Image (cartoon, rainbow, N blue to C red; front, side, top):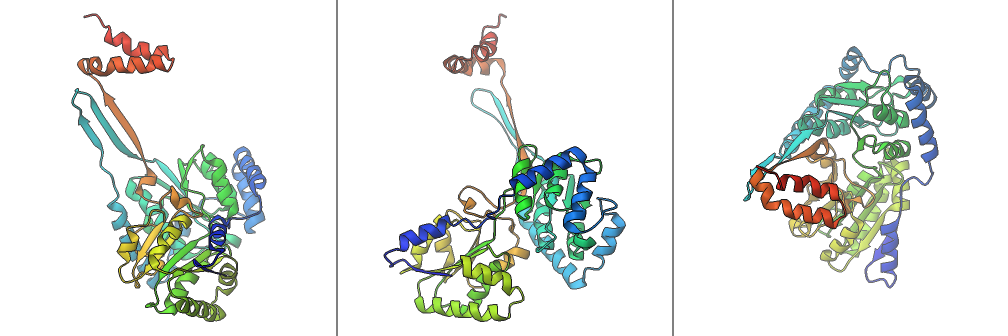
Length: 429
């Protein structure tokens, strides 16, 4: 864990190293993934079954989970978990329904009709982890925006190591309107969704997080299908003053550290005494934390505590880090929030822990990582929509703007472009 102070002579160099720290998998899996993709593309179902047997230690009889199996397993989900999933689905849906955009249509001053229509994707694939991480909340976050956008076919793949699956994952899939579920994972699942097999029709876009092999597979199939992003390890940055309970902030920092040994937790505070209290609290919590092995590795290898003279100085640092999650645990968080330019999602005030956003706050928890918040946003309804534009000129309108088009086409050395407009301008009546 790094302790940095902006007054240190070497702060700039240390902070620059923190910003540029690459926490993604250092092992190059591109060759292995490429071979799996090519094999599934060539041999389809047979290849998928072989990889599932090898990696998940389970011999699939059928790739698709039957409706009976799904219902039986989903029924094993406890009543309290199902009720929590339904509340989460209600809140997530309400927030994402407000994102639905309006079509555009108008006639401009010269009589040209212009328009833009939003069209839902036809079919989408959702990858749901099933190894170290098995998250029913991710099912809701990925599937509900697709359903709200109007996607008709929502396909889910989820690995079933040794034939086992989390009942809550299937319960969430039923609540979210997933139309097909396949018990496969890894790069082979991404290949099946992208290229299709005898059992699985290909989709138009693949979303959802996974391990390094899944991330690399999504990278390699991009272009054949769309993808949401290449997800990296989780991140949280907490800006907090000394009015906070240090235990609360410690728990917040560890909430992301327990995701992955490569996750990153950063605290920025204006109190050295408070920083020390948080560090002590983290160590005390880690001693009894069931996810200690993962969280401790993340905390020791990638965490940082930064002490600034004034919390307003946290914003330039935050914008450079462009973190996935930001908590502003201060009296008037909106003042700082208005200055943030790069972050996945922001949580305002002392009573808004990031974990609320992970489950049922409303905004999506699929967010940009590895500083990609500089140019990307979290998953939304927009990710499952495409735009088609329309243009209609009548004869007088073309006469008004056509000569300028001919001039530009000639300037670019494209005579056929120029001719296709000019021939209409010179139409004999």
